[in-house]
Image 1 (tube, rainbow, N blue to C red):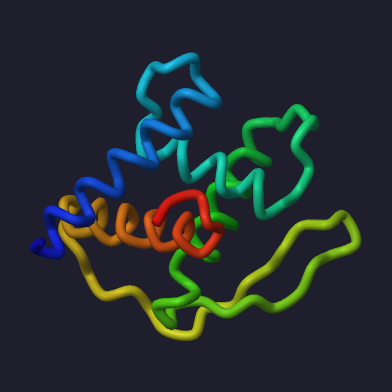
Image 2: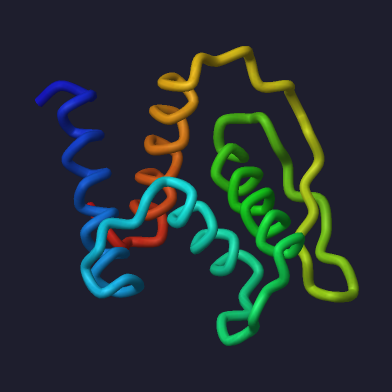
Length: 118
C-alpha cells in the first residue's frame, strides 16, 4: 500500500473516531482536531476556554505534533499548567497543501503513539 493511501485511510479513521466522540458524527476539520490535541496535552478537559486560550491550545498541539520532526522541543510547564516548547529548527516554507499533509501525518502519528489507531 502506498504511503499516501495509508495516510489517507488512517486520517479518515482518526476523523471518524474523533467526530463520533466529540461532534455527534459531523466530521471535525483539521483545526478542530488540533484544538482537541491541545486540550489533551494541557490536561484540563472540563474547563471552558477564552479565545486567546484556545489559540494557545492550538499552539501547544502544533508544537507537540511537530516535536518528533525536530522542529520543537518541550521546555517546561508553567505554574498554571501550560506546557511550553522552544523552537529547535524553523519550519521550511510550505505551500498550504503541504502544510495540511504534514499536519495530518503528524496527527496520525500522534494517535498511533497514543494507541487510538494502528
